[in-house]
Amino acid sequence: MLQQLQWDASYHVGLAEIDDDHLRLVGLLNGLIAGLNEQASVERIAGLLNELVNYTAWHFRHEERLMQSYRYPEFIAHKRQHTQLIEEATSCQSRWQSEGLPVVQTVVELLKGWLLNHVLIVDKMLAEYLAERI
Ligand SMILES: [Fe+2]
Ligand SMILES: [Fe+2]
Image (tube, rainbow, N blue to C red; front, side, top):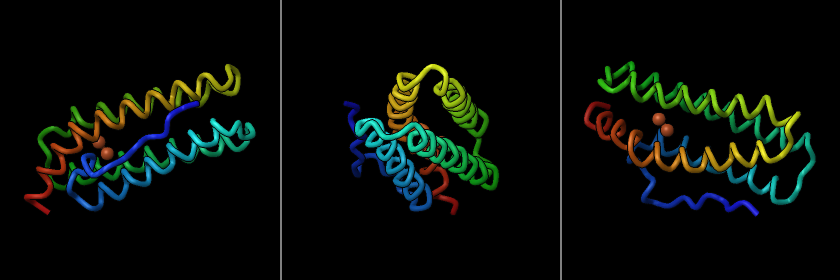
C-alpha cells in the first residue's frame, strides 16, 4: 500500500494562488495513490496519471509566468527543477504501459518526495519574493 501525502499548514507558501495549485496537485496525487491501492483498471490509472502530469505542467507554467512577470532572479534555476521533474514524469508515463504498475509506483514516490522538497524550499523562496511585489 502506498501512503497518501499528508498535506498540512507547514507546506503553505503564503501566496494563495500558488497554495491553491499545490492543494489541487496533492489532491490529484492522492487520487492516483488511491487508484493504485484499490487496483483500479488500467484505463482509470492512465487517466489519473495523465491528469496529474498535465496539471503539474500547467502549475509549473503558472509559476514560471509569475517569475517572468516579476523578474525573479532565480528563474533559471527554479525552472530547471520543473523541467527535470516533467521529463522524469513523462518518461515514466510512456514506459508504464509496457513495464506495468511498478513504474507508476516509482513516479508516485518520486512526485511525493520531489513535491515536498521543492515546495518547502524553492517555492517558498519564490513566494516570499512575490509577496513583497504583488
Ligand atoms: Fe516551483
Ligand atoms: Fe509549485
